[in-house]
Image 1 (cartoon, rainbow, N blue to C red):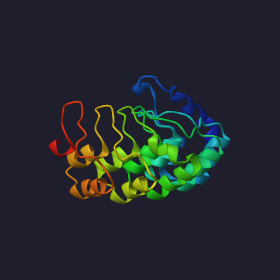
Image 2 (image 1 turned 60 degrees about the vertical axis):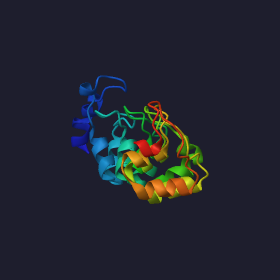
Image 3 (image 1 turned 30 degrees about the vertical axis):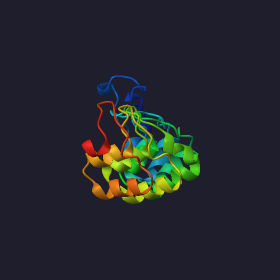
Image 4 (image 1 turned 90 degrees about the horizontal axis):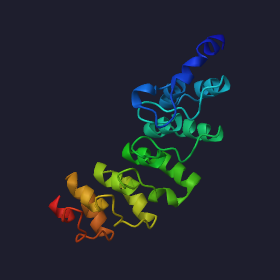
Length: 198
């Protein structure tokens, strides 16, 4: 415990959100969250580590747990007051990171915590979790999103739908899943391309 107090100033090296990237550094709390180590997380919070500190990507410890799918650590950080709506430098929230890395169990937990509205959250590119699932070919996750009555034709900043991104990533099974659930093949992006033109 004494060694933690001696190095406690380390957590102050992490600059505030919006500071230049090279000035922000991951703290020991980020690493504990990354590993999903609940015991270490509690110890570090007890000696004053900042629960909202930002790493070089603008991610808080909560977002680190989402990136790696650590449900228990995610829950623990929320109970300690972590910002559920935190975003990284790309505007990605926990639900985006859970989908991107195929952490289905964590996405279910996030849905329980925040409701189905989280499926409509958009990153800086206007992409919803459905866009990311389509781009990454995460069919099981996408099926669950579709079953929640999500607007499958939602458009990102380039007016691309999840179907555009499924074709862009050359994932025909994902494209078939989307088309089978009402995705429109006639939607045109800002460059005049239909999904099959990607």
